[in-house]
Length: 167
Image 1: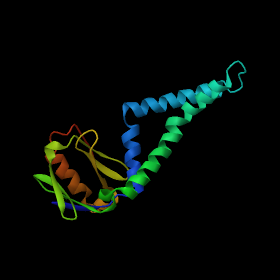
Image 2: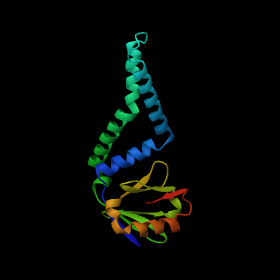
Image 3: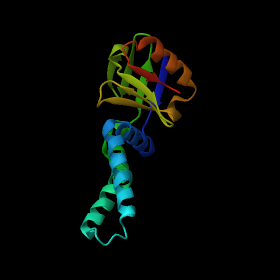
Image 4: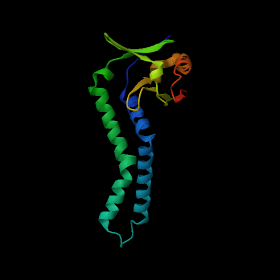
């Protein structure tokens, strides 16, 4: 059995939001569009035949996905960590051979390993996706020396997961 007491920080939440947003088709397309718009902007910055409104639009689209969106995600992650009761309090995760349980105060919920869609690892966290929009974020700073045991439990029991990448 592996027991982890975890409390998310805004840094870990921001890391999750960046990963979740930019490792999708929409995120990749957004970055490509922004880069393309910046290339067009700088290629035409001195072109007098191009309308200034068009240049401003290119610059705006250029910074939208590579500057504005990360800033918005950072603000959102700070707000979410500050205002969410479930994030502000430590969650206790208990993993055994049959299931894993998430507890906070007197409440607890159990999840079957069969419910796990995928498990990924970032520099700061291990993220367990139950569906496309619901995930449990386990900060690596809280997992500590339990990482190898957690990795083994998930690998052995989450047979339905399409991806398990825990480093």
